[in-house]
Image (tube, rainbow, N blue to C red; front, side, top):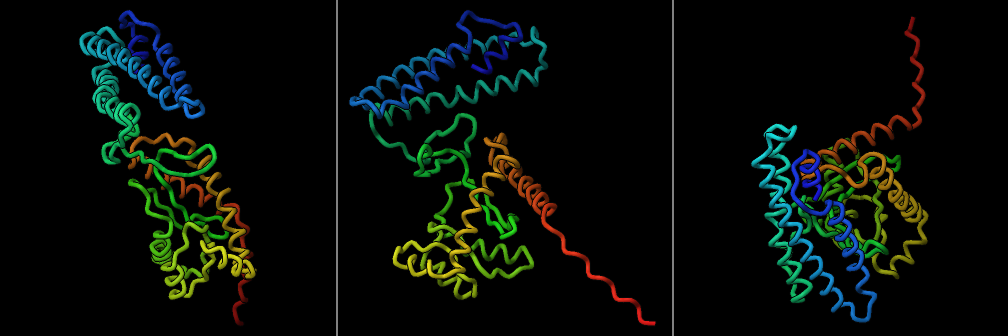
Length: 300
């Protein structure tokens, strides 16, 4: 519908309702679908709403095909060049080509109540690198995008980061590789590491002990956690770890932008890299500077 709006603005028109009408109808159906779990007959009503969505999508597809053909044949009547026309045609084609599979998957999942293989799922019509991220948080049970891991120093510098193109490994599998990479890329020796309980594992405990790095990772075992809470050093690391949540918010909102506008994984990765660099320069500029040591007078 957005592409059709661009075409109509160039003076090429077929008889149809304004594109905003179709977007509004779909938004209403999405809201109705969201509220189906609250109904006693939620499953049946969910199927009913999906059938309404499918009919609307079929109508939109028919309009899109007609407008695509009209633009392809009469693009000289617009103010666009042929390359600009091709860009709009590709936008329409990208959605039209995926619609049959998307509609089939929705039918299979909701009407037939059958699972869809992860490898076949279409999560976004505009970005093939989007993944499902299970958060289990209030208001964000499941999100879509790419997982980002950052490692922060006490001063707020981002020492390491990784944006995962595929589904991210379990947090506990990331600790050893992260420690090795930080020590290889930076001329430092880590003395202590703090993280939440998702990063805890017996293997990580052994690896940190071998490297003589203080383990400030929150234990999964509640009995062991009670023992660790007696340590002032562990408590300090856990308090410092909680500040990383604020650091993530600062980084996302002020240096990346939320949502991140870059399309495609390569562009998102590039944007995150520049964001990390800019953030660290900003942090360094705000750190107090040590006074320079006075130079010794030259011996007479």
